[in-house]
Length: 270
Image (tube, rainbow, N blue to C red; front, side, top):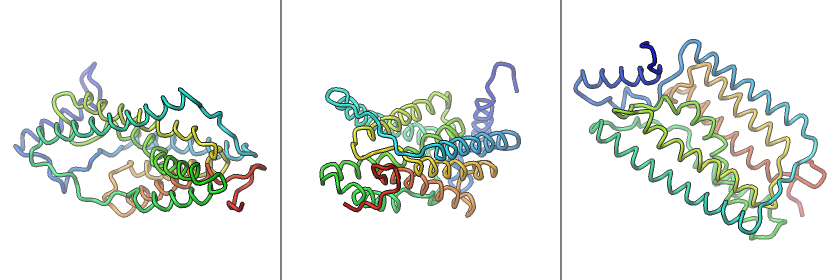
């Protein structure tokens, strides 16, 4: 590697030169949407993710009662809602721009038609579960809890996932792939934080040990996935790890609403 040139940029430039030499865009059947980790990088990533999982498991063990979060009110609550909506709109604009640049750089490129573990089966189940658990608060709070909770659940998965794959997205956009990645992912990070912050608006939400355990489970699955390079889920094993980790993030959000005043698990009985 040349001095002063980041490894990621070198990898991107090499791929761009290969594509240009072949005279054709990367095919949808051979090009994953992100490049896997290899060798020492995969081992380090797996160890870091395992330690994070242990940290959340330890926090769950030490958390004997549910923790209420101070609710923002008035202007502060209004700002959270506005930031949440604007950040979501900003991300979709950035996503559209990123897609346009990919089409300009690789006119024939089509994303791999692989069913990466989807949120859609989990989201309706999470919505109705939260609606049921929070019904004692009245229908307005229950509906708000179900909507915000369901919207925030994927962000528990997406934030660490995006940090892992951010600099490995594929194919790279010439001539500054890192710049376009930041355009996409920084707007996504803002939306993720705003979505999780919106949970603090809900009086029905508490941080529980079960939430910590679910997040620990998600990171444990990430660690196993990282042991296989955190590769694009085109194979049954990596696809299964992707799906299971997404299930854990929805369980984590459901557990935010499954509590009683004594801190034990709630069966939502009035």
